[in-house]
Amino acid sequence: MARGKNSHSPTLDGVSARFRQWRKTRQGKAAIPDELWTAAAEVARREGVNRTATALHLDGGKLRRRMVSSDSVSSNARPPAFVELTAPGTLRSGLGLPEYTIELEGRHGKLRIHCKGTTAADLAGLSRALWDVAS
Image (spheres, rainbow, N blue to C red):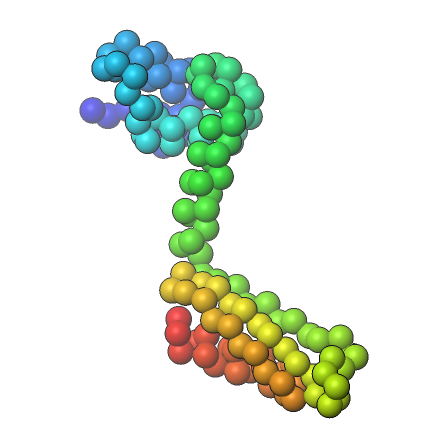
């Protein structure tokens, strides 16, 4: 069943009509289908959460959570960014050797590196090399 323009960019009126139809035909207290939540979240991004929730007779908090969870799913598709951190000039250990801990997290897991007595540049190079191999 083709919806034309609504399948690409749903309007508040169009989604409202879909919710009315679903409410007329649902069985008992069936949960709102993911397809309707997705359409509502897309409209809320353009029209605002409060306005959309009111028009669709939805809980604004649930709609916000659905928007956040759909954002986090799409953010997992992006490649991880590498951020190089430089340590402050002061030395932390009693022996005068700098200590570093770097934690990297990507779509395939986490990597934690703890080094003592090396420079931040050495640690950044090591973590880049390991990350390139793992990616």
